[in-house]
Image 1: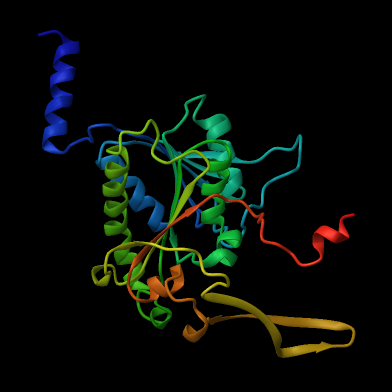
Image 2: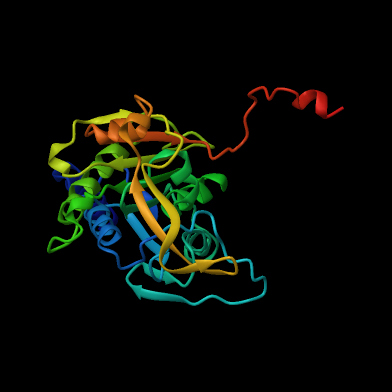
Amino acid sequence: MTKKMLAAVSLAVLVLLGGVPAHALDILLTNDDGWSAPGIQRMYAALHKAGHKVTLVAPLGAQSGQGGAMNIHVGGYVDVVRQGDNMWSVDGTPVDAVRAGLDVILDGRRPDLVLSGPNFGQNLAAQTAHQSGTVNAALEAMFRGYSAIAVSVGIDIDERNAKPAFGSTLAAFDPTAELVIDLLKKLEANGADRLLPAGLALNINVPVPFAGHRGMRLAPLAGASDVAIHWQRGEQAFGADGGKLQVMMHLADSAQVPRGSDIDLFRRGYITVTPLDGRGDTLVAVPGLAEALH
């Protein structure tokens, strides 16, 4: 038996035994929590174990809330470091990491998927989708013609002072990775020439504890975020000439959350899946606008 035939037989056996998927994907993996964050590291390990070809290119450190921010210093340089086998850090935003990966590090390869996450904390509602580095990393890839998925795992705010803090989120990273791998198999099985239709990305949010979830549901985005950041006067002085304002956070009132929205379903224990097209325009009629244009 030739080496080529032996390799083919070995691959077939591994597929039957579950060692590699029937169609291994080429995946660019990124996030907004930093390349060494536990979520992305566990996702990398799970995807690699499942037989996919994975290249991790993510920010050097935490970049939460950066939205679609990117480096625009044309002609300047950015530190990009190989941190391990197929692992790279980029001293920039999530969008910068995606650009470094697609433009240079993959060396001309077109990945089957750009996967962002899993994020430490949910990314629900239109407001958050526009602000999230996790979601915008996926949208950057989508705008450039790639299939893209953003994945986030929720937090239980009551666990913030526990040891370890947010233990249910940490515990959910491994089963979330397996859920994503299973979803990829099902998307591949649809027979299309790509995982997702052109111009669409997915925003997936997983509630905690993972074992308590009630299944997956398609969900439209709510309007305002479920975890709202607001500014207020604090203990430090703020007067007519300025001073210091305090940044705080609060949860949205459940009574104000639209029934059936991603926030509502997430709070009821469902894993929410929202297709995104990244567009910000609308054809809703604006009273008086058409007349004002003439």
